[in-house]
Amino acid sequence: MNEKILYVRLPCNPIFPIGVVYLSDHIHKVFPEIEQKIFDLGTIPPLDFNTALDRCIDEFQPTLLVFSWRDIQIYAPVGGRGGNPLQNAFEFYYAKNPLVKLKGALGGLKVTTAYYGELWRNEGLIRRGLTRARKYNSQARAVVGGGAVSVFYEQLQKQLPKGTIVSVGEGEQLLEKLLKGQDFSDERCYIAGETQPRARMIHEQPTPLEKTACNYDYIQTIWSDFDYYLQENDFYIGVQTKRGCPHNCCYCVYTVVEGKQVRINHHDEVVEEMRQLYDRGIRNFWFTDAQFSPAKRFISDAIGLLQKILDSGMKDIHWASYIRADNLNPELCDLMVKTGMNYFEIGITSGSQELVRKMRMGYNLRTVLQNCRDLKAAGFNDLVSVNYSFNVIDETYETIRQTIAYHRELENIFGADKVEPAIFFIGLQPHTHLEEYALDKNILKPGYDPMSLMPWTAKKLLWNPEPLGSFFGEVCLQAWKQNPHDFGREVMQILEDKLGCAPLESALTAPVKKQLTKV
Ligand code: B12
Ligand code: SF4
Image 1 (cartoon, rainbow, N blue to C red):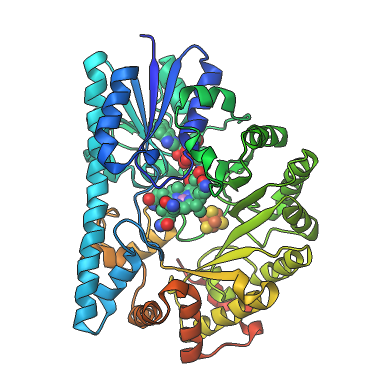
Image 2 (image 1 turned 90 degrees about the horizontal axis):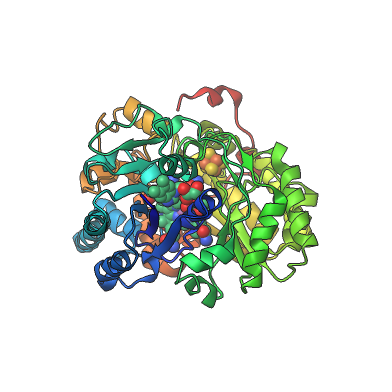
């Protein structure tokens, strides 16, 4: 059969669909004769999803449908999907005033309806697309992958049409084997209704792949809406410079989705890819790596890449990324500033070294501060988002005071207006150490559904256990009431007013005996 591949990026906020772009680029390099098309539902208004998909399938008549599903989980301290999910949940769980509780319940209902609505809608789009494609080619197949599927692949098996191939992590090799007619059962995948996902499949290492620069001349020919992302200046277009993260942070699943082995893309290829986007007018890039500088041994690599970017003459660009700020040095800081880094996120989670150790994060908070000073000295004067997730494990009033001390020191370094505390509560994810811990401590029961948004499950998955859970609940509610537009800073201020601030030195030291806590 002459294959025709349609890549459908399922509805999503308009984040550049780098996953399907890379997949189609790879397949084109291996099978230049195969006809492909990208269809991004992120650029289509919701009321038109069904008709637009039908139209696309009628015109293209694909034999293989590659569905890419980016996100499912919605807990975030920001608005979206019918409201602010964190606020609604907290109002419902923690408000003392019955009216606020009711408001939370109604808001939560709205968010829950939107959440299940989106799940069913996406499953419906997969079913619809496959049925429609089979009108033209009875053998047409569907493969489903992407970030959301990688996290929830086990839960999705009953929801997808029988015969759908469900993929975990990067999909290049799986698609290649599928198209070559080879056995692909050794890839991280299973077939819905036919095979079962292997136990701990997500922990298997991905098959290594040498990535070359994406060929955007080609991509433009198979994606009619590509220009959508070129028109607005505020899109940060994804460019991947490496895959994998060697760390073990207790709540994080990236390290298993991408694997622990860090695989670095050749610098010339990264620069060549950026150059193609640059020539099309793109000036903002997001390095989509799990971490741009994942460990000390990759500092020289990051320096090499940034030096090449600088030498390329693309001087008016900006870039952003997740940065492990413990893995920087003055030379790297200097290059970060010179190449236009204008935003980064540090996920230290807590400003208490003791808790950072207990969460197995491998950060040295003193080093982070020193590196931040180097970054400032190098001329960095833009926004830093510091992600704090309170109450993950063994939080006490004293560790909260330490986090405040740490945050105030970051403000001293960068300026209070430049450091944005992003207050998250961890959305518990399957295959993490935190999940094991919750099962161990009987907080969750084996067989629980990590995708459930029913209030009794959601309360456990939105990680904020007692005895401090209600305290944080009340602090957050007060912050939303007092200053909803600067929620993170308000939370920090309320905590400081209530509990005070520890000496910085105590935040930076962790007594050795407490490092042995089992997570
Ligand atoms: C970088 C990143 C961001 C950046 C994106 C910047 C940008 N401009 O691109 C930022 C910080 C903005 C971001 C935000 C969010 N993110 Co994010 N993000 C990531 C991260 C680290 C990498 C994603 C990426 O681009 N990778 C590189 C590309 C090439 O990979 P990819 O798209 O996954 O595609 C590959 C594979 O998935 C696979 N594949 C993809 N589709 C298909 C289809 C088939 C059939 C097959 C076989 C394979 C396949 O092959 C592709 C190529 O190798 C992932 C975690 C991770 N390590 O994967 C989370 C991740 C995608 N994010 C996630 C979430 C939830 C969010 C938010 C919704 C968080 C929130 N609650 O606000 C927001 C969304 C904001 C919005 N506006 O909607 C989740 C999604 C899963 C879930 N839990 O529901 C992830 C997986 C993290 C996690 N474990 O929870 N994110
Ligand atoms: S460093 Fe970041 S990406 Fe790596 S395991 Fe920790 S939280 Fe996850």
